[in-house]
Length: 600
Ligand code: F6R
Image 1 (cartoon, rainbow, N blue to C red):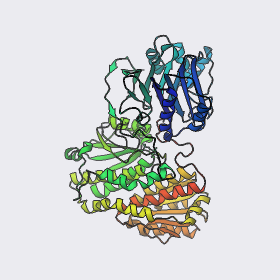
Image 2 (image 1 turned 180 degrees about the vertical axis):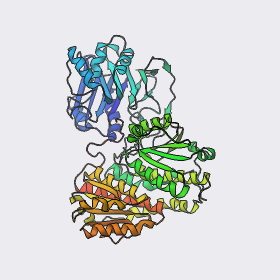
Image 3 (image 1 turned 30 degrees about the horizontal axis):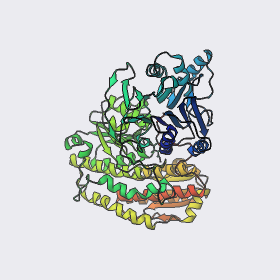
Image 4 (image 1 turned 120 degrees about the vertical axis):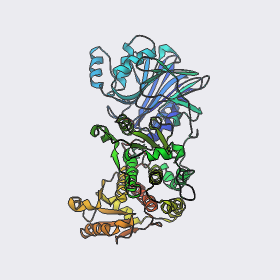
């Protein structure tokens, strides 16, 4: 989603802005721009397309020196992709520059009002309105932004400067993230700490309903409602200052796919001992806290939801604790009460997904205790949770998740085991031995495994692909289908195998591959029947895990249900990227998608 970057200080602002935006590129965007405060006015450069287009323009026509500037990568919401709609936006007098992340919900009313008062609007965006609203209010920028933010409904982050106020800018947060850092002579602002890493070791995060007054060497934070000052805690920036690099891999997706075994080791480190005991003390989940859990409610989106669905299966089987996984975006509208003793688990790689964050807040309001399972321990979801389970999978840059998904499955298995042990339900030792062995076996598997060329070609040419599964394999089928559609843009869908005869079978013909996930051996006989039904209608059958007598069988080197699930994800991830490459798709940044979904 949109990336915000701001800088005030002695370095050439243009370099800091472009450097920071480059580090935010992975979030997904379709245009980029910068506004520099110079002695001759605001120097504005905006271009549709990748950041490269903007950088080339800036190299060919170097901008004048500036000690203050703001930059932006835009992921389109209001108005098409164009230079004009790219941020930053200026007011009528070209004195004020604004960048915005999020959606202003009352934009239509505000636009009509501004037009009726004679403002000349140059774009179709909701964001530009903020610059014109700021133009109308009296006072210093902090007060003006406070007034304007109160008039704008929705979820957003804003960053603005006014040439008349010199080396001074202000930022406000209503849901969309803002990180701020400074040293004696400079101040930096960005949508994520990753963009600040080359220059700073610590930062503060604005919380919802906070506004910041930023000058070189300081950041003063206030409550948006009444400008009461707020003391902020500093957080370490744990990512490297070097530009993320895919190394020997073709792209980040492949790099992250191959990093999975080491990510699994890392999430187990210090939490699973050689005897198979799980200790989640670092998350705050003590024996007493685990004993207090009567039911679990997983709140997540996309791949994080699929990992959660897997955990629900395992919880019912091994811990006999009631659990459900709900699409976070549906939760707020459908639930009005929760049972006592509910632990709500917000599962999110980024820790910033707005649907998951909103669901977490709703669950807390309904009385739940909240566990945040995130790959970013300083993220908003982590900061708002009672307990934090750090995934430690390392930064995931590719928009399509690989290592975060399987590492979530490992983390959730540790949670299942800890709950089962605390509730005295089952001895989990044997199962966890297989989990400990999985990284080494996955490494060998990844070295040796090759997808059949015919499978790639069949999928690349198919009008659609069907994935089937039962029990835990239904969540794997959903993940396989999501990966394929995200990367290759091929229409695909996952069904519970038992559902096939109740409608989806009508979609099957000889052009449609049917991929059956069978990592849990106990479902193999029924899955074999489902595949036979599809094959009898001409389908090109594929099985992953148990041998179902398919045209293509992708066997796995482990049969333990959890280890096989983790290993089974690998061929599906490889299939998605191979088909996407065969079709010439962009791998790390699929069309229309963003990494961190911060608008509803
Ligand atoms: C799929 C994918 C998305 C995310 C979803 C949730 O490959 O990456 O579906 O899983 O947007 O994101 P997080 O986990 O950051 O909350």
